Image 1: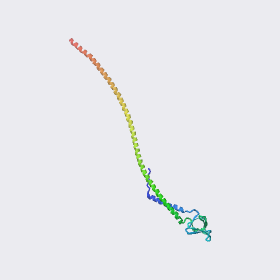
Image 2: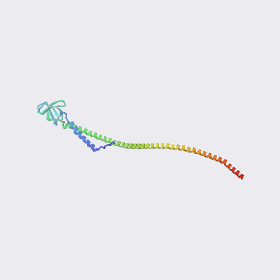
Image 3: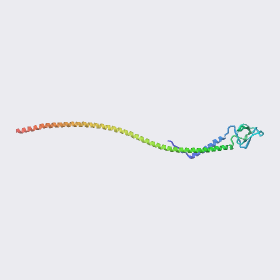
Length: 238
């Protein structure tokens, strides 16, 4: 059976803080990572882009702080680097005014934008966590209903099994009672046949007895008068 684990709010806040820290640690540095040949003008008001590798060379352009340039060539002996601006202007400038990542003034707007996006992400995560909590509560409610339904179905199954068991027992009893009824009917038939035979034999015997009685009566009716006549004859002789 499934179990829904309760979401602990302090752990959720802690996870969000970890997520924010991960954004700051991994996303922000990636914003500042330059391409292999890109450099930026350091925090100087303006840097002179010259036609050659010395202060005697003609100034081509003044590059403000934070300007992105592409490094073309670097001369360590003179301390100058040849660069190209975004509009295609090429020239030489002092290497010490170049940095490998955008200046803090340039990074600040991006960081502010990223921070705003992070806040928006945090709000979205909070809204998502709220949705997940609501879904969890709905699942818990559904789980409770499912468990109740499962319990009811189990009870119905037990009742059906009990009824089936009773039906099997009743079927066995019914078969035994039917067999007993058949046996009783056979015994009744046998008794009726025996009774009929006894009744027939009794009638026959009574008939024989009656006939014998009639015969004896007739014989006595013939013999007794003669006996009386003989007695009278004997008396007359004396």
